[in-house]
Length: 478
Picture (spheres, rainbow, N blue to C red):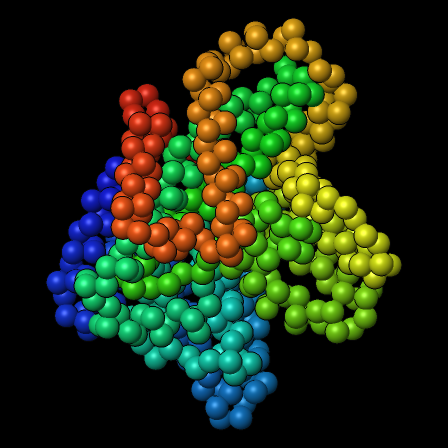
């Protein structure tokens, strides 16, 4: 993955070959590199990716032919059945391993086989892209792609394969077809791509992975900590998951930018949102856009009255929670955000005015993350109960810090990392620009100084080296 020491070498070789090859050979190179990347992570996942790519490409062309002949009903049946099969595949991989014991008892299936069913890397992300692609063909928003090479590259493109962004084929496919126009001389593009990559690695390795060590201890030993430490664990995880997933997204955007491909900006300073609706316009933008376009709007959106709007909102967030995981804790996380959104819509309808919107939104989101991080719904409720009832015992903090091996140096580094990210996010929120883009507006000396400081911070303060295994990106499991 991105945090492997092999990845920079892999990226460098692919980039060198990309610019050496004639334009017509570039899509084939990226597809070969993407399949090699997938196979490197998990060879079994490569076969699933290839089979789904082939079947979706063929099905898309079949739906288009049926609709072109005036056989709209046949096209609809093909789209519904195909999408249903892909949803079933996703549900099997996502839910069967979690409920293997129940299924083995009721259906007489071998529990070991069920539990050994491992989710192929990136499956949730590229299946959502397939569903959107087939839907767009059926409703006439786009034509089916004739080239299997281009379509396969769209699904498999290695920077976005593992954890997105979830790209729309209408936006992505034309970029694949225009790869021959990408030149090495575009220094602005390469400089911006480098800024995205460095900032992403800083967020991931300096901030997220360092926070993960403390967060894991707090969530795994809930009974040992008082209310202060549990609240701190909640806040640390709130920052950790953002820096982890946004860090991945920035690295992916930077890697894609090297090849002249623009990926969706997945985050826009979400913790500076003024309300829950604003938060979801800033958090995991590609997923929230997909849910809006392919679930919320088809259900009727806000066009069929307030009650129907609230029901549609709850359905969307239920799906969002279930997509993230099979446990009931993920369902609870999704429903919490649904309740937040419905309450906010009701407040606006009644004309209620709430002060401190940003702080309340941040705390509401942070509270919901407890259910996302906990190992189960029971563990989440226990964490919440302890956080509000365990009390505060400063006399124990010294021993707790020793047990957690939290030195003053580690505490300062965590505070420094959080502070840097928070200041940068605040600045970018006011300027309405992403940090890597903002840096490009500065003089060369300032830009190179920032690059130098990021590199130094990553190499000196990044969490890696002997005895350490980089935390896998959180969204890899989804």
